[in-house]
Image 1 (cartoon, one colour):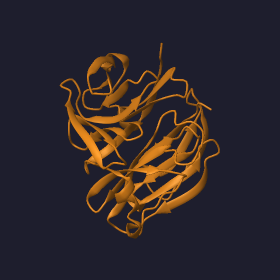
Image 2: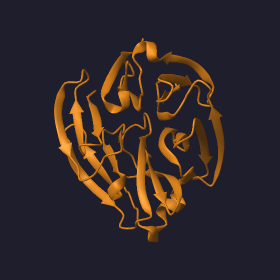
Image 3: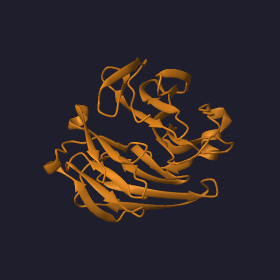
Image 4: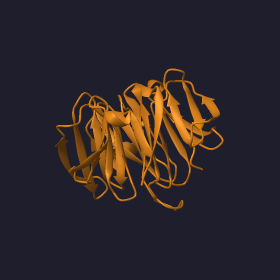
Length: 254
């Protein structure tokens, strides 16, 4: 529907606004929501790392459909990323990935058939997930098995490509001199990657292999401490959470 779903970390709630920022609804949650993703099937996933839980919601009505979590103190779900244009719901389709931190290792765990199993006895995360850097705070699923990740405390990106169900993979670290403290990643319908630089007050546009195409937005456009960004379903608007979460900027894409 083109609405925007915001995670309010401090007030422990989700806020739904229309495409122009008008308030529509909100949902209180039990803990601080860290990350949100809406799949192509219009299902929302919210991570609550401080309580080691994940919510599956109806994003239009803000209704919780399912809650899952782990009683193990060493298992936490940090981030989540939807796979773009994953089509209609069919068996074995991967609509999104969860960033599951398990015993010091982080896995990009595919949510298949809406099943999320975080019990260590099942070994499901180990067998199906793709191992990525345990310091990752945000990642973006470019497509099935391919990820671009932001590493906590670092000024570079990591591009991971896996195949054979995660058994084989390649990794490439990309250092961009004009970007400081990358915080979030998204991509457009042309296959370009967009990264927000919180410390450099700019937005970079990259190819899938990490080559910088340009810097379409910077402080001259009002970019200041950006922390998150995404496109609307039609890719004609870019939303940027600005000023360390205090405002949202809306840009027309032409």
